[in-house]
Length: 384
Ligand code: UDP
Image (cartoon, rainbow, N blue to C red; front, side):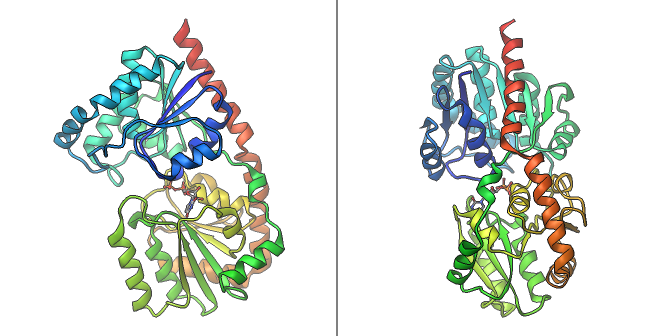
């Protein structure tokens, strides 16, 4: 099957890392078309997945954009759409992985007579997007997509709530390669030493730095936790959230936590860093569409605490394979941190449960089979 994947981002966020795993089995016959240059291109190249940057001109529309701004950007998209239509003729199917990719992919699908699949990685709700953006995404998906793959029941529910057609949407969770998340104790010790954190209780936060990802909640919780609790914040501001980064540093200074919080920036050794933690915290203040970091922590055999909303509630059963806390409540988070620090046996058995069930539930081989079947049925229908 020849697939033309489209993604607007040059940087590897969760949607892009998911695409990387989905595109791998098709790499001999696929192309990933990006709407921006950046490190995601290199990641695809390292994995021998053909990639082409189709435009380097920034598309001037943001998650909160109005209709006028959206319409203005349409004219700007014409050269890109023309290029995509031409490419699409060489492929069987267009696979749009982001919202701007959906806009371009929908028009290209119509003009090239190639079926369109849209991978929905977002919760299309007013907390995350402007009404205009939601309206455009739902209408394009309803009218042009043969199939929508939602990354969670939460994303599917929001899509339908916004008027999306229920008969074209299927939930497929992100897949992971369990092997990648197994680490040796000697490597873990080395990394802890390298970070200067041996003997500390390390809480890891793995996410791009953005207000709704809630790193400030973890910092506030740290101030209410025992002295030995330290945090590593892994991730960078991928989409220009520099004010928030400054705010986080200021918060750390004001709370006198300079020795207990480390900003590590964007890293590619997530499994190793997670393995070096005693607890992984997810603190999103708005519902998380899926939450890759939650599954990754489970696969590393680490206890995970997450904000109780959106996709996180489909991944964690409180007290069984992790912990759920009210979003935006540092006090509750601090309590879980203390529990994990003190109740080591129960915490270890919860983490162990999580690791076993996650490696079955989110195995990339099974997930990719599910996707292959769905794509095959799209092609079968389009050819009849
Ligand atoms: N991640 C990474 N390096 C970092 C921080 C995060 O590779 O420095 C990865 C993380 O391991 C996860 C992804 O980025 O696989 C984030 O996905 P998630 O679903 O948690 O959030 P999203 O970025 O999609 O909002």
